[in-house]
Length: 127
Image 1: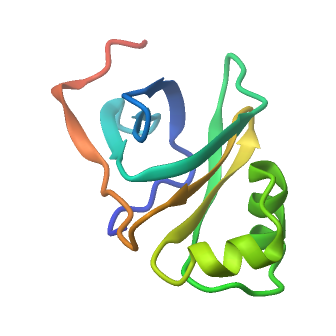
Image 2 (image 1 turned 120 degrees about the vertical axis):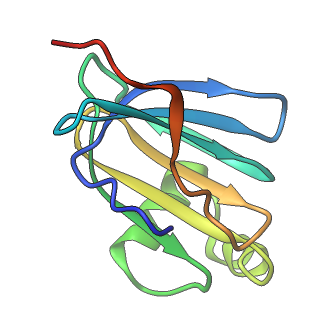
């Protein structure tokens, strides 16, 4: 992912079919709205969604490791380490850590993470 979305706010999460979801994001500095469309989703877990959902960090893992983020994402997705290792041979494990509100874990069939795209209309009307 080329864009840093640290401190962006998640304004909505929408599932799109059985293997996709869409995140709507707000850059609170510029008030620009972005969309991230995830496809080839094998598993998804969202915990703690609230009125304010600020992103602390995004981690993408392509191999099993002892890092906290891998263990946290596997726990959220109810994946044992053997299943995670097998899935990561071709896929990715994504953990979107929350500064507040929603924390998101997903297992993707592919290695690519979508880049945020400027939403049509471009600027949110929040004042």
